[in-house]
Image (cartoon, rainbow, N blue to C red):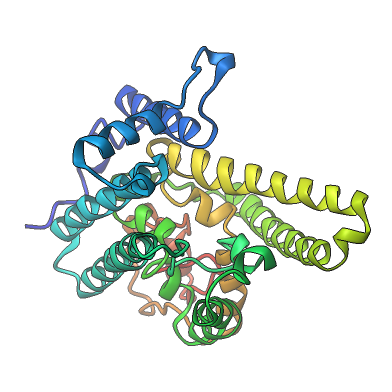
Length: 338
């Protein structure tokens, strides 16, 4: 039985109540510990999540390489998507589109971003997350990373990032990746379903979005270029090499850890689930440009809008869909993933 829409703002988890604030605080703390633990300044002198991972791994008899906090995080992340996916199917399972995208994004996470990387490690190979591509996974185009991989993985990474995705984005829109493949969007679609209505629909948010997301894309392009230059000429220019490593480190800290992780997920219960996807993801920015030039559109039924506002309320990307419908305009925003 499909849950109704009217109870969305009544549940304490999804209406920015004290429960939501507490949950957001727990998520923020968990991500800070994951990326930056231990934290001596806060009196935390050991890596709590690593200790927990080692204890669980020892109890289960896991091999040493699976006793890391990152494997524990991947397990919890995948579990959250599975449980959230079941919730989405219960709530929206009468929609064929929602069923397809939920099965797809959860299946890709389980197989390509969790099981396959683990299997590679079991056989002594370096882990590789097959559902992430440059510029989202920016290091997958760094020469020191990608050139250590087998040829077929290099081909997979380059073809996906630079050729196949552009074609799919042109014909299908960015939804093919952002809603059906990407683990970041997948967590938002599943675990984040209770908070999708909290995405800001204001003109101010849209104005910030148009600047911030392309700024991050520009930074990703510049950082990648600097890393490649350092690989080619850094050994002859020590000062440039130090600069390149600083740029690489700052991009990883600000964009990869703080924005995509700590803020992007930690603020789900307060700001909606697509803050990273809307304001920071360079892959979303790149595919959005392709989408604007491509064939993807969401058409409206002319003169049929009754202005109930449900479409705008539940748009996870913060698009005021009602305004487009009332003006009989097709939705072709670069941020649209639906």
